[in-house]
Image 1 (cartoon, rainbow, N blue to C red):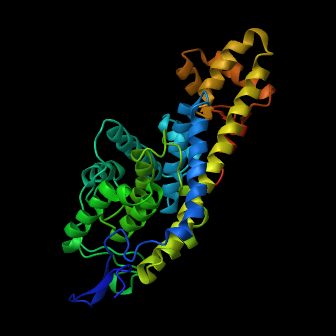
Image 2: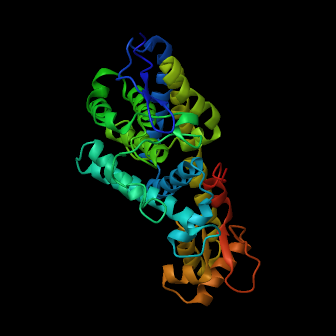
Image 3: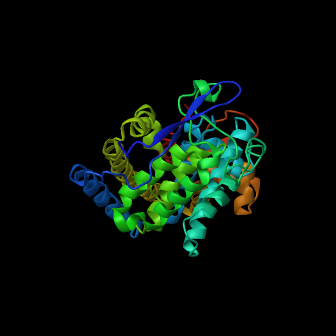
Length: 385
């Protein structure tokens, strides 16, 4: 019997019997073929090391983290079908009116809160454990949509992926009565896995195992992707929470879902890990490139503003606000800077003249202004599916 692929158990119900998947205990048996994985692991480790080096010299890394956490929340929620955009999230967080369902935006906003909570707990010395995952799940499912999905509690009923019922589903995770033993093994993996294998490999294993367990009624995909950044930070691979893989998974979602299932049916852990490590490498390289572009943009725009004479002070303050709120109204800018509306409007008009800001609403009143090139960088790959 191949211990790498787990097993299926038949569940008999009044409607019809169905088969539920019981994942194997990890690490895999037989052991992983590390000779195959080392080239991918070396590239990913090198890319993360370079990213860590960059975060120590970039002056505005805290701003970059602030924005990238939000982009990750957006992308991970989009994989699950949320239709909100980056602009919608920024507008919502700053009490401006988004263009889509507030419920969609709230889901993304709760994801931001869940990330922040998890990272704060780890930083305080709290272990990465099932209790922390439950705490984060409770935050993730706050609000009207998630309130009926047992937020913060492991499921007590059967769930499934695809189809209208377990009998015609694409995948059925373990029955609820088997979750305690399975989750106990999973928690041991989180505590001891890095002693037995490289942390990046363990992270890839843990993410897939979590998705196969599907321990909550809802939010498993989002929390499973969130688990990746928690592991990378907890294991000391990342100095700052700045590497998020959801864009890579969104762009390669068909391959992603196929490989998850192939591990379950064939035990092909190495193929999955090659894909995962390639994603880490690509994401780290793209993150570094984006950081460089953003800093270059900020410096170029600041140079232009410094040519304005007396008007430059209010424009510099406006640029600083736009770096956190890249889409804004005159009223919101005046509120943020504690200045009059005419002064805020003039500062934005000055930035329009310099080609830094665009007015996108084309209205006479309640106009919306955008930090054009910056927002373009932030929203790359973040359009709803």
